[in-house]
Image (cartoon, rainbow, N blue to C red):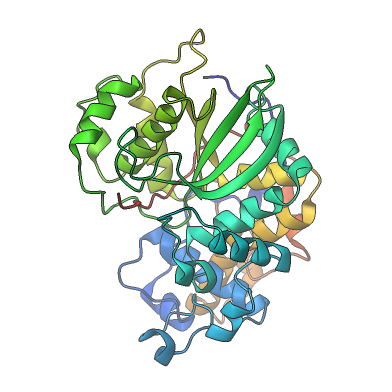
Amino acid sequence: MSKSKFHPTKHRSENTFLRIPFVSDTVAKHYDSHCMIDSRFRRAARLLQILWMRDQSIPNAAVEERGAHLGSYLRADAAEDGLNFISPQVHLLALRELLLREEDAAIDEDRLITNTLSSMPLVFNAFGPLALDTKLATSVFCQLLPDFVHSVERIVFEHSPGRRDERFLSDRSAFDAAVHVVTPEGETGIVYVEVKYSEDMAGPCARWRDRYDEALQEVGLYENPASGILRSPPLEQLMRLHMTAQLAVSHRITPRAMFIAIGPRLNRRAQAAFRVYENELLPLNDSDPTRVRFQHFTLESFIDAIDVAGDQETADKLWTRYCDFRRVYDAALVVIAPKMDASSNSTSSSEGTPAETGKRRSSPRGARSTRRTSAAQTSEPLEATHG
């Protein structure tokens, strides 16, 4: 697989963790973020959303609104005002997409406008600014996929080339976004996108159909189409989406396509799912341009690409809201060690934890360092889209 030569800016080494900070029941209850079924990553991500909401003075939903109290949900009036989105322009874009959604598209309006933890608003927050500015989108995707993208023409959301179509999978499998591009060779193409945030990749799986077995043989993507791993909860949605992308090329919806997945670096379950899925694929054949390649990126790398493309404001907003887990570390320490001098809480750099606690940087931009690595880092969560 061709790797991108893009080298994004990196975040400060003291803000880079080897693993997600652990949020105990005590800490979660202190911040109104306690949910018994949360994975370790989801619990930390939920707390990060609550801290972001408090920074923005966004009120959370009361018990009578949702039947339970989780501080990561917006109060109804705040949701209606579009405060789950990073700008009024992105909010308006999301509303337009709701009105013009594809037939039978699975857009959950409640998740989109009220749930800060959902990957659905993340898709609009991350791709909305690019959909509104194709020059920015072109710069971002030329960094991430230089061998496939020359320019970006448009971006559509919650898209399927063949929802419930027997030529495809006869189900509702759909992509979070479809980026219509022109390739360096001058052909039209589509980058199909799946985004994960706090998903734990545990399913539920779509109801298995006979058509899936047929398509597994038809698409020619897998070392072993009968592999049970492909049918497991962490991978089966990736399999369905990749097959859908390949069938879009086979049925001449587009002459060229790629399938990419994006998720946070510290969501290890999603990261692992991406890597395991990649290992199930046949080796690439460079002589076959109709083969739909799979590539995965960290959310952090995607945000860095936006920064390098010139939109630092959007990059900082996304980083602060979705990736600044130093905030979670500091917030947890305030609860478990309230009387300890923060300057004395130095930790081993070999453990990947910050050397200072209790201090907030002056701006999100300050979180970025000069260390450089490849943009094609893997990421972590997965949510199953029902067929």
